[in-house]
Length: 212
Image (tube, rainbow, N blue to C red; front, side, top):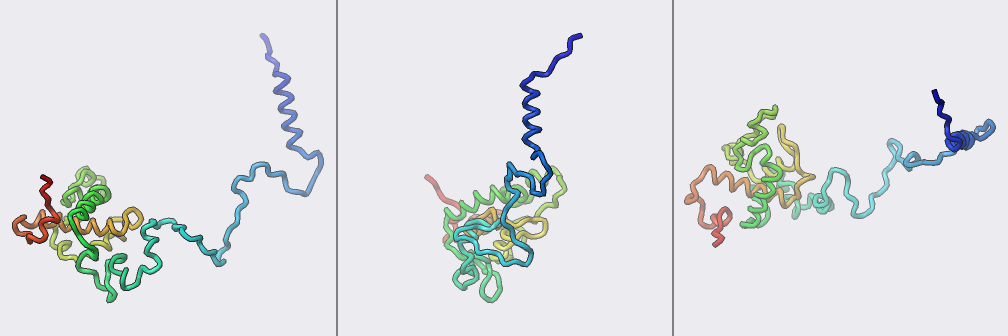
């Protein structure tokens, strides 16, 4: 039976590592830190004043669009658009920006991305997730009387902060897109609760356009 001998190069390498890892004498100095990585970083102690954030920095949990309106978020001019509420604290009755066909279509695309997962694409709350019974209670029907009677600002607030089992979408969806979703929800409600002929002629273009 042959016994394999270790290569002299391997033996010399091991000896070199051992010699380099030792100082050769006892020392009170800390060991040499060859790879500090992120071990040593400036930190803030509890109760210590935080430094000012550089201009343009977006805090974790905020979208750039939300940050854009932070400076005057609660000014009378921006209050309705940013919060869905008036100066007196009541919800705004209608979407506070011009609503046209393109705006409603934008709301439809955002709704299908973020909301249809649970509400399905027509707001009947019979999405695949709900039908497969994964333990999530079905959301309310978007065409229900309760939601129809909610002011637009209340629906905007629900999209922003969530309600019940629904999480908020302030980070994922820009402010204007949230209002576009509100406009599209109103279109869904009309499609479920009203005949097209009952829609005022001045509003029909919001929900239907002849592309020919």
